[in-house]
Image (cartoon, rainbow, N blue to C red; front, side, top):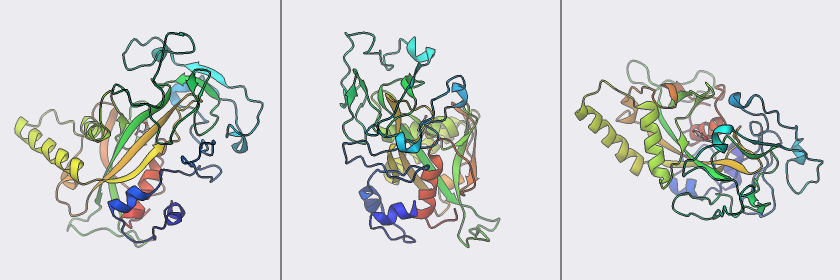
Length: 327
Ligand code: BGC
């Protein structure tokens, strides 16, 4: 990630501001082959990394064909035999927000690459191709066609709020890591109900919802579950969150993510924002409590040694870089 930032003219070890963050292109690097995804190129230059090609815990019966790193791009010829898979839950869903399959019903017309106000079908990686009436994953082969567990063909948008504070001792002093000599950050973590993995409390953007609202909603649902809190305190807490989330975040990432649910026709894209309470004034004081899709919520030290869901480690590493914290 360090090299990634410096490639775009941002000196490492300096605190960068939101303006600079927003200048950073939304590429990400494949953990397997180290190549970058370049959404500015219409050819398939992006590469699916580790999780996209392995599967999920709730997808154990689906074994994806192995795709060597150098065969992931669509432009590389490959004797490719993907497995068609759309979960029963998705196939039989009658929800307005779940797509019908245009390959099975010629009457289904989906406004690809557009925001039809019910659903934003635009990709952060530009215009995606439609092949055989369905979108083609801009980051290459995944081993599975169909939607897998995802509701939409094409991009499925999520949002990830990364709430951080400094780890402090009982006297309020920042704790320095003995090996890196850098202060240690803590972030609000959850344990996901679906995969049991440690994660950022993010979630899917609902129909007609703005990403900024998703960030707030997901944080509230998954980490601010206080059934015993009186109405007044609840109101004050939510007002603080609203104020901070609407005014103080730094965009960390937006784009395609290496997610175990990705298929050749459906994939995850996310927007991650960091909300940092460096002075222990507001967010840092919240004793989070899990709810909704989270088994539990807690403050957790940021470090490269923690294993996290999907691409969440990469986002946290970037947060650590920005605040010059231990990783
Ligand atoms: C998760 C997000 C994650 C996204 C992409 C969503 O289901 O809730 O935290 O970033 O998937 O992996």
